[in-house]
Length: 366
Ligand code: GLU
Image 1 (cartoon, rainbow, N blue to C red):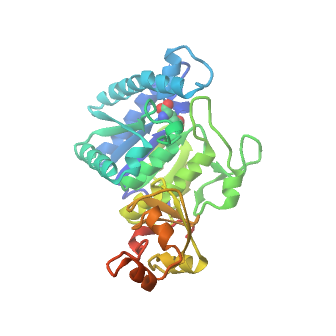
Image 2: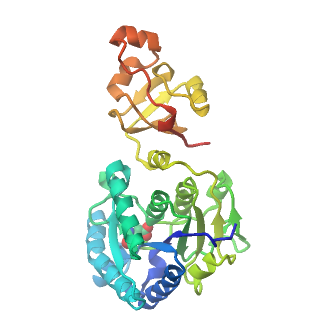
Image 3: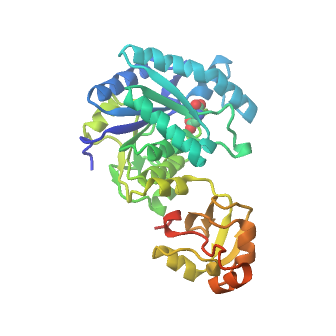
């Protein structure tokens, strides 16, 4: 479980709380992380860093002490803070002769299959030439209001780990581990060393939100764990302030909580799973049973359609699955409940009578 000997590709996510100090970046902390990452690179591993802290740093620069409220101010603070953050990373890695690269992401980039493949290529190229890509959300242009934001870097790091086939995702924050109950409320809460499955009980007992500038908390971390573990990636949650924490995790020391993956989905399935659905196709129990047995979804099993979507869009199938639909919402509205023979009679023999083939369907609640 803790054998990371064969680990090649590592994503390290670092939260705002541990990266910032007072009103700026904690330069000595960034230097320590750079030192740990450089040892991993020397040992032939590849590392991607997901660094929060832009908003917090921008706020510090403007002498704002409390949480940054309002979309516009968060965008402004991110634009001010991001270059400061990168300056610190660049300077720290240069001490080890390592070049860093900045990659800023929006949820849209990851939803769109073409831009996602571009992202994958550029990260592959950077890793191939020994550069450390440093990722963050492009907070100045992506907002919840226009539906393009990830919301938090926990999710972003998990999506990236999934998309670049990382072996392990290390999430560093000021939380030591996952506990059996919320440690901020219960003194007798015990840390869990390993988790095989995120049960409803685990989610219920997880604590809430993190700090003033960060958006994540234990709940978002658990969501992130689900995303990354569908890619066959192990996740380690640990306190980023521990001495040589990254090195110790990779050496197999029992630090924090390790989450074991349950399945490894294909690349295309992961893209489907992680895309924002354009609508919902409600299907009957028989059709759902057929999907679980790796059969296609036919119009006869469709009960109703919600939202407006096109051929090729990712949609929800009830709450249980996601799929790439071969029929648009307007086509499906006409064909819902109809059998193939009726469809052929109605629209001609060449008309498509399959909503989604098994390769385009991913069950969520497997
Ligand atoms: N992207 C935000 C920042 O750099 C942080 C979001 C988060 O902490 O999850 O400030």
